[in-house]
Image 1 (cartoon, rainbow, N blue to C red):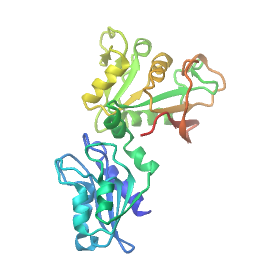
Image 2 (tube, rainbow, N blue to C red; image 1 turned 90 degrees about the vertical axis):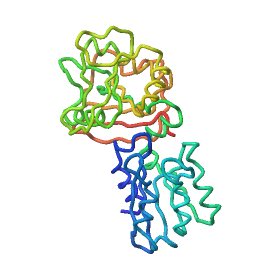
Image 3 (cartoon, rainbow, N blue to C red; image 1 turned 180 degrees about the vertical axis):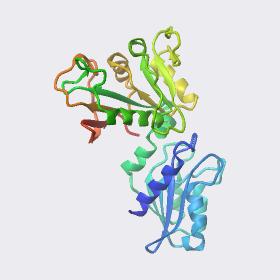
Image 4 (tube, rainbow, N blue to C red; image 1 turned 45 degrees about the vertical axis):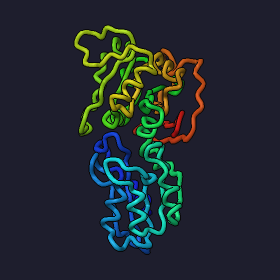
Amino acid sequence: MTPFDRALELAERGRAKVEDHPLVGAVVVAGDQIVGEGWYEYAGVDHAEARALAQAGDRARGATLYVTLEPCAHQGRTPPCTDAVIEAGVARVVVGAPDPNPVAAGGIEKLRAAGIDVDLLESDDARRQNEAWRTWKTLGRPFVTYKAAVTLDGRVSAPGKRWISGDESRRLVHELRAASDAVAVGMGTVIADAPRLDARDVGAVRQPRRLAFGRGPLPEGSELELRSRPLEDELRALAAEGVQSLLLEGGPTLATSFFEADLVDKLLLFVAPIPHGEGPRFLGDAVQLELSHYAIRHVGEDVLLEAYVHRL
């Protein structure tokens, strides 16, 4: 494992704890030895860089600092991380990704102005680690992932089957829900399936907010939140309430509306080994997708296609 990979691993320890902050991990290397480690865990504590440098002590002088996100250059709830890096006498800093927050950005320039050698990796892994936060901070809306299960011919249902995808895929969906701030469907799905949208049997430490987009009323007994305003307005309102990530599980009508409004950032398509389905395709024919950063893996008998519409 490289020191930067270790920094990414450390950053994950803050998952679901950092509130309105990004995940950040830091590693200090002197010679070929790791002498300090740190990560950001929750609001009010020292940042990852400060914790790693404190652990390294005098061994940080002349060392290399690996950090997953550009060190902040502003005074917030804690002092600027750039000041700690400069005062520690670090010779080189390897940064995974730039900070998109204009309030905190500028750390790379400040470090270079102090004579420190800075390498910016533009790491896909570092950007992916904070993809929801980056979108929330930059665009003022949640990062939207659309998930669908389809047959080989792109249909969303199959004759005689309640589920298209297999057990492993459905478990992964519950893990995705547990990792999301909110999960949503459209009113058509609410009426047809009465979905619960909670994360079950995956040890979820919290449940996502569960939403229905469309015109009400909701059926009696539904525990979903109805969101009836235009999609852009609702996403801005959700972002203001702290929702950084939204998992969209609705049918083709809702998905098409989100794609036509250019409000989807990532596509997750579970393709089942069923040659022919029935009913509509997972997206309307008018939607033209331009995708990038493809990844394909097997999930049980299904194939999961992951691709990005937007990356920040």
